[in-house]
Amino acid sequence: MITIKSLAGIRFPELFEAFSQAFNDYEIQLDSEELKTMLHRRGFLPELSFGAFDDNKLVAFTCNGIGSFNGTKMAYDTGTGTVKEYRGQGLAGKIFNYSIPFLKEAGIFQYLLEVLQHNTKAISVYKKLGFCVSREFNYFVQKNEDIKVDSMKLNPAYAFKPIDLSQAEKQSSFCDFIPSWQNSFEAISRKPDNFTLLGVFKEEQLLAYGIFEAKSGDITQIAVEPIHRRKGIGSLLLKEMVKLNQHNSIKCINAEIECGSITEFLKSNSILVSGKQFEMIMEL
Image: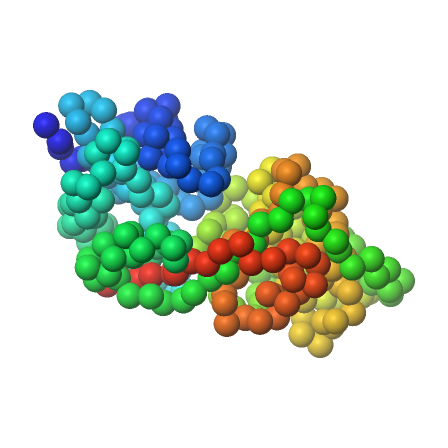
């Protein structure tokens, strides 16, 4: 018999096993440490996450992140999955509908998620639930050996320096679009030690910054003050990230499609679009 309940108190190995089974046909696989890191970064809260259980076995789940986005307290779909043998029963929709009263009671009235554009079945489910597309994103993945970064030398007037998160946040106007949930300053602040933060300075003025998760190869944010673009600063930041990368590839997830500058920048450094996502939102 299938029952739906909160994931409060669930053991991580049990969640990891269900997650692995639900996503074993996906291109990208996560090990247990990578899953822990992802859930933490995205604000996973077990008490407001829910799953479907067959007896005591977790067979479908929605891991909800809770946080602030664009000044609003929201829930975020950190991971929704169903073990293959239990698909076709509408469990994802049942779990979501079950969760709504608990989310509202916690003062959450908006729900945010991202979905691959080729996952038409999931998109259909979300639209039936009441979700609307708010933005479209590109994502980029490239193997280290296939990245060809512009080798322009740094002007001697510029200098690389490590920065802290508050310095980058003060220069958020450098960005051409609002970072997605997982790339937001709030997400980064949940575990800042996981990230490398680099700044490019001219004297004491910060002209550009990059935020990078070396273990996963994830470029979380990269931004150059508009008047200092096309001088090779962004490429030099990228080159440093590739050098520090501990993963076999570089990833840039959730770059807004309408932002041509980031797409052209990555393309000029041999990092091409790998796929597209929708950001979707629903009023609860």
